[in-house]
Image (cartoon, rainbow over all chains, first blue to last red):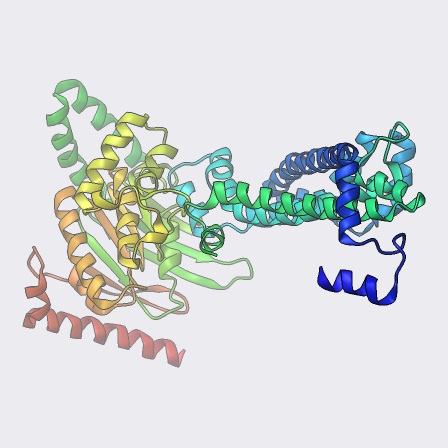
Amino acid sequence: MLVWVGVIWAFGIPAYMLPSPARVVAAAVNRFGSLMSSLGISAAAAVGGLAGAVLVGVAISLSFAQSAWVRRMFYPYTVLLQTVPIVAITPLILMWVGPGLYSVMLITFLICLPPIIANTTQGLISVDRNLVDLFLMHGASRRQVLLKLRLPHAMPSMFAGIRIAGGIAVIGALTGELFAGSARVGVGGIGYAIQYASAQTETDYLFALVLAASALGFGFFFLVMFVEWYFLHDWHESARSSEME
Amino acid sequence: MRGGLRRYSCRFWVQINCGTRVSETALKTIRTVTVPAIELKRATKRYGSGATVLDGIDLKVQRGEFVSVIGPSGCGKSTLLKMVAGLSPCSDGAIAVDGMTPENARQITSFIFQDATLLPWRTVRENVGLGLELEGVAKDRREQKVASVLELVGLSKVAGSFPRQLSGGMKMRVSIARALATRPEVLLLDEPFAALDEMTRDHINEELLRLREEQGWTALFVTHSVAEAVFLSTRVIVLAPHPGRVAHDLAIDLPFPRTEETRLSEAFEEKIAEVSRALRSVSVVGARA
């Protein structure tokens, strides 16, 4: 903070280049309503995209866990999905789905999907052979092995995937909004508002938006951490050690 | 196959003619004279490329016996056990457990693995109930059975704990309790105590014999430890390696119940010497070949 203020004072930087903290706070307070609505829209897009990616990703992983065959056939596509730069296909999505919340959600979804699939699949198939034998000895069905052994075993790695996805969900939502922010002029998520504010050289508000976006990212991270802790703290070391920190 | 049919007709007949209690005893008597608990006939295991792991194993384990299998590493001890469990098929020959195929005999067989193989997300109670749960035993009956087996193994106090809160010896006890919860007639143990310190190991050995006394199951036990094999068994089978085959079949006629006293006795020392000699002889042969 002091450095920030000091730099402005020492070099005489104009407010449209680097506003002082006071101006940023003032901008945030003055336009609190629109700041919050942007934040809400971005949060909704990120949550929706992430939730969709968790549901679809886990479902895909479950089918991958069923046979090495399915895995070998379809896994390369998820790698492909990861390597295609999302920015490059955003205009396509925009063209197909149209601008607005849904295309932003779709972009978030696509960016969140690969880490969830990769981690969950790994967790599902890396079960101790002896445990599978134990289940077979008691006449367990495939379904029982999946639901009572593989799925709980995969929980820690699934959450590791969701944590990565949670971090990039906000980035995905903002990226999406930069391109496909708003169906109506003037209302949109943070990404859209950032673009708008930068075009208008409302640098103080721009700063407020950036801070809000960071806060959203943080919030997301802790949300995922909490859910993970809730499910794993009884038994898993990773969740226990974060409990002690 | 024939053994299986005979066995079922016996059970049917007995249950019609007597009350449940009587039938159980009578059934045991009849089965004792009909089929051995485990029978291997020329059982052979080859892996794809043609490497023979086990070559024509002939072995009969009678009901109530405690048979240890010992041998140098690579002699196929664990493979033998997996085959009896029906987890790994015979390449040649046949295996019968209580007159049935190993797969069909799973409901009367329990397996205890090298490590405790507990599910970390389940409490001790839920881990012990796993076998019953998978076999579809109703919840209240399951809880009753779990409670009684926990009592038997002395784990009632930690029933609500998670595996991570337990020591290695305790985890192994939970693993034993889980195996016994389904009331098996045949128990297969694959070096279950190898990772435990000696004190704990001795304790659990004594406990295992006490449980056997109470429940009367038949055991096939794979181990590296001569002392453990002698202490626990009524018979020790020594396997020779490359390919695995039965080299010695030694009766251990030390009196039961065996306790700390047994370990200090001269007869125990002599048996250990005898088994060690047998083990050394197959190791030397193995090295020369």
